[in-house]
Image (cartoon, rainbow, N blue to C red; front, top):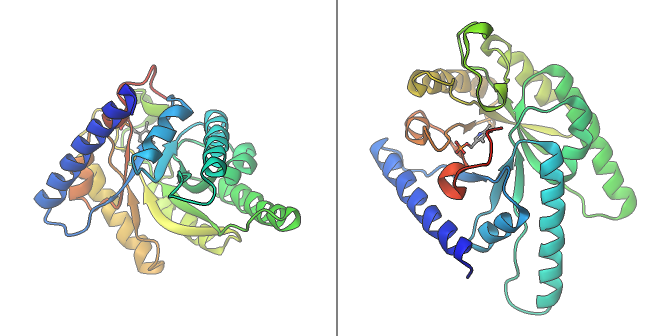
Length: 266
Ligand SMILES: *Cc1c(COP(=O)(O)O)cnc(C)c1O
């Protein structure tokens, strides 16, 4: 094991302990899924993480994600070929796309991502749906193994401040207005190639995350009432995972706490 892998293993262990304590404090008997956000970190770190048992990684920019995913796939294949015939080879991770997404990038994202957490408008639903059905066709024509639908989460904007009053933060954040969530859920549910899984949010910068996540939980209940399968709540980052777990998060997106500081905030 190289030094970086040892470091990542130690940090992962500490994070898992932190998550377990938050789960116990919240009186929950289920542990949320962990998505390690690898943005700005190299493919080598993703490979180290998968070797340590991480199965889900998150990225927020298509161009970087596409390159990293291609590199990881190639290394995983090469390692598989080298091990052919025996042992448990390396396993490629599931890619979660968590950043703001332009519709014209949908066709790239559906090639590597299993989940998009940041669906926030009808035009993006349409773009992802047509990109996904084309991707499914392409796989059939070219003999690439078929894949299931794209899992989609609606990103909700929980910041009630008017736009000019908001501090600039992670990716200017994005997200659908809470009052648009049910219509968007309907649209995803009706779209070919997409499966509605639930909601995602980022806590508003500079505000107490607890009431924001409580609002997210209420919105989730309204969605689940109409779409009983759409139970995922993707919330909680390095700074606020305890509050997210207390509010019922099913998926945590953690970057810094595992990988250390990023060169810049995206
Ligand atoms: C970067 C990012 C994260 C991870 O944030 P950390 O503070 O590094 O844990 C989670 N969600 C989104 C949408 C992000 O952009």
